Length: 259
Length: 55
Image 1 (cartoon, helix red, strand yellow):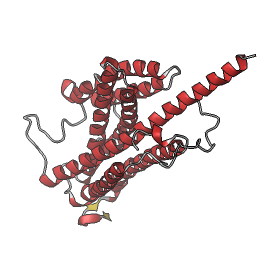
Image 2: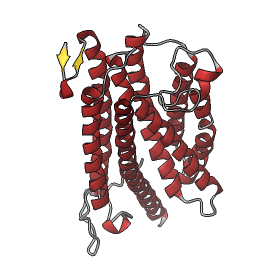
Image 3: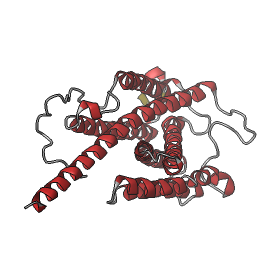
Image 4: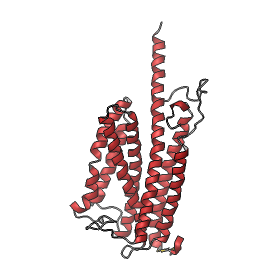
C-alpha cells in the first residue's frame, strides 16, 4: 500500500476527522453481545456441560473446535458469494471484493484454530497430534488454498485487477468445502463423523452438551459478523489511501513534466 | 485434578490440552481483533469523515 506523504497533516478547512475508529453504536452493541456469549461458552464448555461417556473431559474441546470450523466454512462461503457478486454483478462494486477479502482473512484465522484445537484433541483421543487422514489432510489443503487466496490479493496491480483474480480463486477454492465435509464418509477416516447428527440425521447429543455447542456457534458467529464489519471498513480506508497516494504521485509527475 | 466452574473436575493430564485449546483459541482471536481495531484507529485518523461510509 502506498502511504500518502501528508498523512499526519491537519485536514483542510471544512473537512472533519472526528470519527477515529471503525466502530458504530451497532458494532459496539454487537461486540458486547459477543463478549457475553463467549463468557457463556467458557462457563458451559468448561463447567456446566457433562463429561462424555467415551471421551470424558476431552469432549470439552468440541465446543471450540466445531464452532471454529463452522465459522471457517461460513467465511469461505461468504467469500465465494461476494466474489460472484463482484464478478457477475453489473456494477462490479469493489465493496463486494472487500467483503470477500475480509471474510477470507477471518476464515483463515478460524481454520488455523480448527487445525490447532483438532491437533490437541487428537493427541488426547488418538494419542497423536497429526495423522495424514482424509479429513485432516483435506482440511490442511483448504487452509493452504485460502492462504494462497490471501497471497494473490497481496500481489500488485489495480484494485480491479486484485478483485477479479481473487474472485476467481474464491469461487474455485470453495469447492473444497464439500470435499472436506464428506471426506469422513468417502474414505476410511480416523476422524469421527458429524458430531451433532447421526447417520440417520437424528440429533445424537446430550441436551446440555448440545446447548454448549450451540452457545459456541452463536458466540463465534457474532464474533465473525463483528470482525467482518470492522475489517471491511479498514480495507475501504486502505483502498482510499492507496488511491490518494497514487493521485498525489501522478500530480507530482505532472508538475515535474511542466517547464 | 483441577476443579473449575460448575463443579466439574478435569483430570490433570487432560487439563493442559483442554484449557490449552481454549487459551490458544481466545489468544489468537484477541490478537487478530486487536490488530484489526488498531489498523482502524490508525487509518481513521488519516481519512476525512465524509469518506467513512459507516458514519
